Image (cartoon, rainbow, N blue to C red):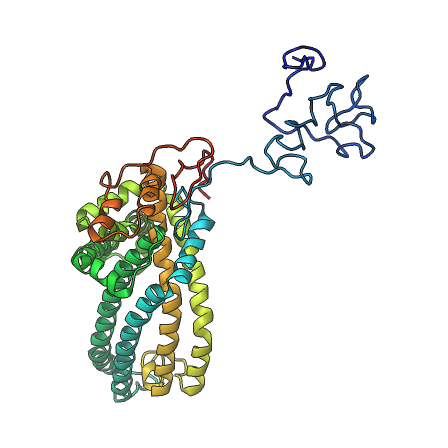
Length: 466
C-alpha cells in the first residue's frame, strides 16, 4: 500500500506533516546520487517531483524527507542518525548510571571482564594488597615446606636400574612419609587462602560496584563473621563435585573384586569418567555464586548453595562460558608473569627428568637449590597477586549481573549509590533480596541521571547474553 505524501493539508500551514519512518531508507546500489538526486533517480528526485531522499522538499514538498525532522537533518531520525557520515547511530536515551566499576544495568561479557580489571585499577590497595599479603604468607610457608621436602628427599637415595618389589615398596613408603604431610599442608593452606581471598575480594568488589572504596581492614571487619559460612559452603561444593567420582570409584572397586580383567576395568573407568566429569563441571558452575551470596547476602552455607542454584538456573552456559573465558585469560597472564622466574629458577638449579633415577621426577625437590625454590615462590606470589582479583571480580560481577537481570537489583543499587557511604548493616540490606531501599521512580523527560540525581530505569535495549 502506498501513500501520497505530496498532497494533503494536515499541517498547520497547509503542508503535509513530515513523516518519520521507524527504519532507515532501503539502501540502493551506489547510494545517493552525488549530483543531488534521490536514490536511483535523477537530480530532480522522484518521477516528476523535484528533490529526492536527502534533498530539500523530499517528495516535491517542503517539510518532507530531508527537511528538519527528516533523514540526515537536525532533529531527524536518531539525532545524530542515519545520514550523518553514512552510518547509523542509536537514538539518544537515558543512560544507566555508572557510579562504580560497572553500569547499573544488565551486562555483556566484555563489561564483566572490564569491570573486573577496573576494580583493580580503582582500588589497588585493597584488591592487590589483600592478594599480595595472603599469597605472600602462603608462598613463604610453601617455600619452607618445599625446602624441608627437598632436604628430606636427598636422603631417600635412588632405586637401582631394576628394583625388586621389596625395594620399590620400601622406597615408596619412605617417599610417602615425606611427601604426604607436605602435600596435605599445601592443600590445607591453599584451601584457607582461597576462602579468605574469596571473602575479602567479594566485599571489596561489592563496594566497588556502588562506587565506594574500602580498606583491607574494613573488608576484614565485614568478612570475618562470614568465614565459617564460607568454609561450610566450600566444603559442601567439594562434596558435591567429588560425589560422582566417589560413585565411580566404588563401582570400579566392585568390578575389580568381582575378578574382571584389567581391560574391562579400564573401559568402565573411561566410560564412567566422562559423565563424572560433566557432573563435576555442572555442580561447580551451578554453585559458582555461593561465595558472593554468603558474603553479600549473609546467608548460611546450605541456603547459599540453593540461592546460587536458583540464580544460575537457565543461564548455565553463559556462566560456564564467561567463567571459562576468564580462567583462560588468568591462566595465560599467570604463565606470562611467572615465565621469567621459572627460567631463573631453572638456571639456579633444577631436576632432570626420569621417574625413579637420581634427581628424577619423584624426587625432583632433591635436585632443587634453595635459590630456585625462593625464585619460584616469588614468581607464584606475583602472578597470583595480579590474577586472583580478576577471577574474584568476574564471579562477583556475574552474581550482580544475574540479579539485575532477574530481580531488578540495578534499581536498588542506583538508589543506594546515590545515598553515600553505607555502614555494614546498611550495606548488607542493599544486597539482601527484598531488603534494599525502594527503587526510584522513573524520571520525567529531561531529568538527568547520575549518582547525585534521579536515576532513570534501565534502557529498554539490554545487552544480549554474549
